[in-house]
Length: 547
Image (cartoon, rainbow, N blue to C red; front, side, top):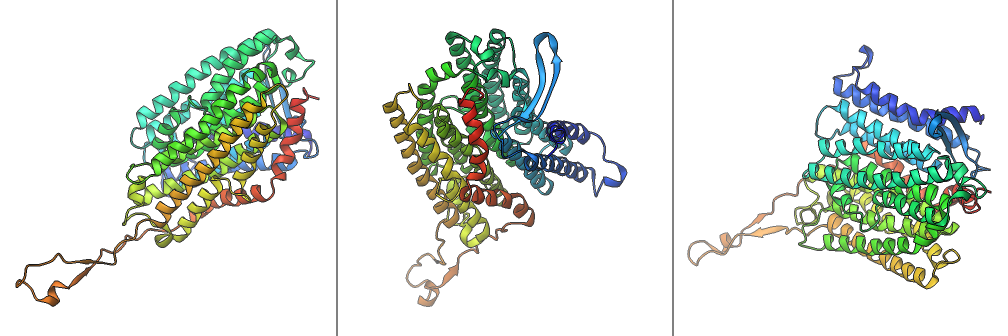
């Protein structure tokens, strides 16, 4: 495709959500008002996110797949000359899949919300915030200037805060404050690191900084150590790396369904993407020093997340299924960070693949858990597993089948998307980069392998308890009566148990919103070369110093 066309497509992907957010605040034109203003603005959200998705898909089709290591669709305009800050956009094989994933998940969230708007204030504000969130996330994956990266990175915080605080469930205010405080404090430290890189190198251009003979050569070992420490803290909070993860379960539990989908599906990827785009190529010496510590914390996070999920799923624990899926994200993102910490092309490719797989699978799981809450009024596992609980296989078989599919995909079974990323991340840890302690990384790999077993345990327990449920008694006997007060026939009378509640199976709009995620999970599992073929050349160039 013509480079100019690609350039306009990428610019449109970044800018159109902002224009859509502004448009959502104005009254709909007379011919597009529908039955009521709320329906019109929700339809506007579907339309705007649909146009962005179409532009992202066109960008992916027009992308030169023979040269995925080259930055394409680039725009480079001076913005603040005094500070050498530029509006520099571009995508390569590392960022393009994340751009498409973000556009897809946001569109599916808008479509789901059109039919099932979360309880809260005006839909106008909801749609505007959703589109602003999309704009910030897409910009994070598309910008190539450190200061623009920081601005885009921070842009998502305010809309996500309000989505949780205004449309969330129980404990939403506390969860929203915890989310904003953790991420803002981490971002302040990250800004110091980015400024240090820019001041010492003389530029904020991420492409120039990634080349061995460019401005990166001016960064001393000490500067790189300080920069990685500062930038890494901000990225680790968003990733989320143990022990900086504690904001995540509360935010997920309180957030509305679409907020949880976007938080897990794309916002967590911003942190890990920053490690790959900034820390690895720009400060490799500092990253090499801190890699064992990052890997150790990642391995702890894998085990910790799995044990937390096992604690929540046990009978009588009153565990929340939404909270369980949130803790599972801590473990899954631990594999991503372990792959990055190995500092090998194999590990980083695994991390990038796991990013996409986690976005598809966990996005689907949060959609399903949200729908469970709508049907049963609760996501308490003891309630869902009770004799009058979900028992989805019998009451809503297609819903139960899809939930079981999401759980099996999340545990990393071969043939589905979750397998390849985790396997490659462990392969990277098996043989880490030169200079890293192999015995230490073999230990981390073993812990990650144990984490996969624990993951299978808690997810299969979830399927057992929610999809199968309890076994209600067919009849209920009348209590024994005293002799002489009733005939034997009367004493033996049985009363039928109360009929099981009718649970609606998948609706058409749910099929539309969730089928793409299930299909892509299968395709990525059966055809991993589609993603690895994009990322591997770009990763090889990243480790080659831009060559």
